[in-house]
Length: 197
Image (cartoon, rainbow, N blue to C red; front, side):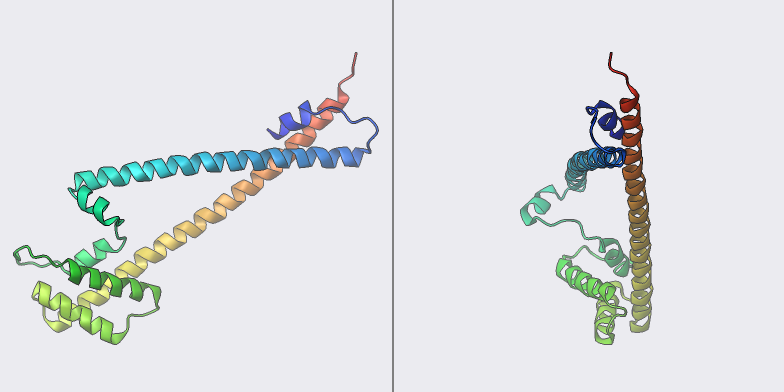
């Protein structure tokens, strides 16, 4: 795009060479910027469609389509860790423990935001785990500590992956801007060498 912007522009006759070079560079950068905006809008639209379609498909396959649409709730990223807390070796009759899981989820989310889980929250969460799974209080506290550590490691891994991808995205955008500007100057030089017959 930058090359075409420099090549197709009309030739300036009475302008200094440095000014021509600057204008070609600016035209190449502007073409890159417009292309970036269009690409970002297209990718955002495609990503929204894919996420919406994937969420709808996931809700239908799990049998929760009506409840998720009625509640308007998205999937909880800590749901796996909360389920891991309440796993039991002995079969327990299915009970509606949604409020207990929601409370444990809010405690978990607060613990992940802070550096460490407060002692009263840890004790209370261990008591909930012991009640639901039949573990002793010390085993339940150990499970809470282990699962919280795993959740923190997963969150740190995701955070690092996002940071690395943002660094590489920035570098790629910077290289793209430079290449478009440089290509516009090449196109401008070729345009200026054309002899009008």
